[in-house]
Each structure stands twice: as structure tokens, then as C-alpha cells.
Image (cartoon, rainbow, N blue to C red; front, side, top):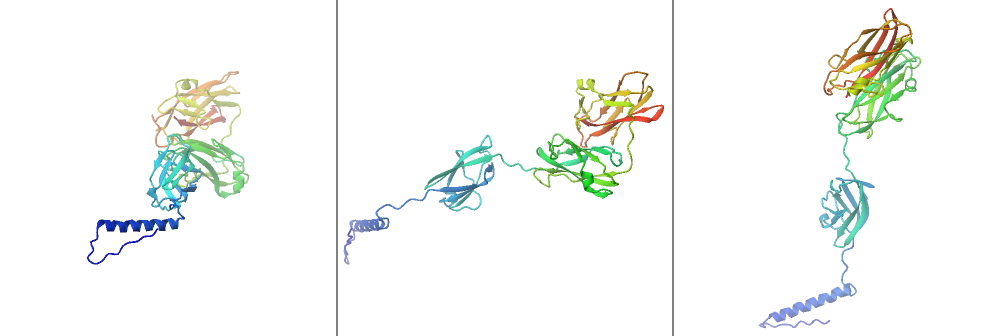
Length: 397
């Protein structure tokens, strides 16, 4: 196209028609230049976005920051339109470019999680999409579990004896149920190696990996059976509960239990037969649960005074004295009535049932743990060396 703009002379009148002609000529010339630069086609629009990856992956917790990597994103970031599961997202955070976007996934993105949801990113150049697996938000573990020795008074033992210890795992200060690894070790050894002490350890109340799940509303109970090795003189047993998340702040401090070797416990006479009864009456009135503490003991209702039943049989007729104590407890927690008492047996008399009352004084769970061991002793009155013993844990509910 030929553009010919007429010259003007001094004194000529410049009209609107003349100026419009100049403008039209310039516009026409620019169109020719544009056509030459694009080969005769209009210039291309912006390229469509491409999503190459997202993180975290494969799971994205609700409420977390999602990073989108790719190409051809809009700058600034607010020009990009993003939806997840059809819901708009606009809370951009941190660094962004035409290759990276960071955006917060709403905590209420879905009523049911986990869920696989479609992520759609739209720019002026088009759209790109990918699937995102959204999971429930990570809730941090807060608070620490406490390990308490509930064994009561445990006598020192001879080599070869097996000592049973009970420990309460109190997670009242923790904000959610958690799985813990119960770790038992030995320090300050005298006379035997650590391998000798650990080779015959037995556990009660944990799985094969020594794991236990503890709810904040209900303390866990773990039993540890320690067999005193040959040559042992003393050792300190250490017990701790390590959070499954390996979070030191939520794991317990190490509890130390001294073990002294050399003092034998009382010898049980096989002519006296003792066992815990069915406690049918107390069960009927929901005052006692049998087997509720460490699988062998009794759980007594707070504020109740149930009748406890013991089965007693003897091989030799005589009068026997039945007595009982609660280890490490005072009468602000546990009160025993009906013991001691004498029970007479005649020749050929079958086993009998001995009853007494065991009151759990607090009407609701106190700040300190009430779990203890009950020690029952039966001794022949005319032969005080003839005795037998029954030891079982008691707790509250």
C-alpha cells in the first residue's frame, strides 16, 4: 500500500479532514508492518499453562500449603484461577513465578477425607488439571505421657527368682490417643551383664513389639517380669514410653526402679490353696470388674465398698488366720474391713469362701493413681511357718 500525505504551506488551513487522513494513513502503514512480522497471521495468544508436579505428594493434608510446579503461569499469582474439587482457592502464599505457585488448601475443602480431587488451574492462555489426594489435617501431638510404678512394695529376690512389676502409663496430659513403645533397660549393674538381665524379660499388656496404645481418658497398664540372672547383686531397671512419632516432647521421662538381689521372698506352703473368687455379688451390683487390672486383678468402683471373695482350701485341718494389706496405700484411698479373721477347718472339710470388704474411698478418680497390689496372707495359727500368699492388682473405675 502506498501512503501519500500531502504537504501544507504556510498559511494553509489545517482541517479535521486533513488530520484524519494522516491518522488513517499511519494506521494502514502499521497494519502492513504487523502483517509482514507475522507472515500474514495475527500474533499468537499466551501459551496454555502446564502442571508438571505438585508437592507434598502423594498426600496433601487439608490446611497445608500446596506447591504447584509447571510452566506458563500468570504473574502476578492472583491472575491465576485455581479450583480443587470445584471449590475456588485464592490464598496464595510465599514465592511465585511463571513456573511455581504456592497456595493454601482450605481446611474445610471436603466433608469426608481422604478424597481424590481434581485441581484445575486456569489462565488467559487456557487450563491445566491434575488429581490431588487430600487427607485430613495433621494434628500435632501435644503433652507428655507419664510412667508410674504401680508395683507397690516388691521384695528383693534371689538369683533365679522372677519378679513381677506393674507400671501405669498416664496420658492424661496428651491431646489424643497415641501408640507408645515400652522400653525397659538396666543400668548400674553389679555382678551380671545387661544381656543376662534382658535375655529373660517378659511383658504383659503390650504387643510383640512392646507397643501399647494409650488413650488420654484411660491409663494403660504394663507388666514386666524380670528374672534375676546368675551372679547378679543389684541393678537399676529403667522404664520409659516412647511416642510412635519419636517425639521426645511427648515421650515419658525414664523411670528408675532399683533391684536388690539376695533377700528371698516368703515361702508359700503348698498345703494351703488360695485363689481369687468370682465376686458374683459385687459384679451383680456393678461394683467390681474381675480381670480388669493387668488381666488378673480387680477394678473397684470409686466410692463403693464391695464384698471381695477369696477361695480358701487346706490339706490339714486347723485354724487359719487370713489377713490382707494394700501395698503402698493409706486409708485415704483404700480401706479393708473384715480382716484379719480366723477360719477353722475340720477333717475332710471342703474349700470355703472367705469374704471381706475393700472400699475405694474417692468417689471419682483423684489426681494420683490408685492402682496398687493387694497382698493376702493365710497362716496356720498353731504353726506360723505354714503360710501361703495371694497377690493381685487392684484399681478403680
